[in-house]
Image 1 (cartoon, rainbow, N blue to C red):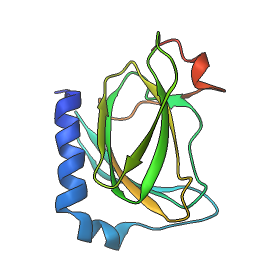
Image 2 (spheres, one colour):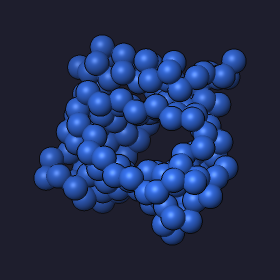
Image 3 (cartoon, rainbow, N blue to C red):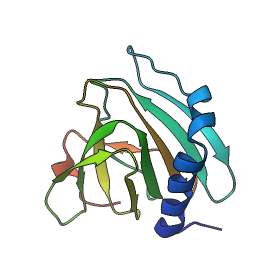
Length: 142
């Protein structure tokens, strides 16, 4: 059974807040490369914990047709995102912020702060291969 963006929103928000202390025992910060670990996998959803050292970020990408959500549990990230027919938008994401989205969205995340950050991510169906883009302007839809 696939999860809706609203259900994914609730999942990442609850995991990030209710399990904050146990997640600190798991998370690792590596300044040489991004770090992540899968927390759970079912037929319908995949749950991840990611860390972001200062200066780390992603390339522009979509999630291969999956819906998703992420919650910033520690620190802050900058997100640039785009829907197929819209402009590129930017937003700061702070600890406690949760963003859910359907399959028709591309984005990139960066930790431009001087402090580390962590995020909890969920995808349904379980994460398909992401497609990277040179620029978010190159994203025309899934």
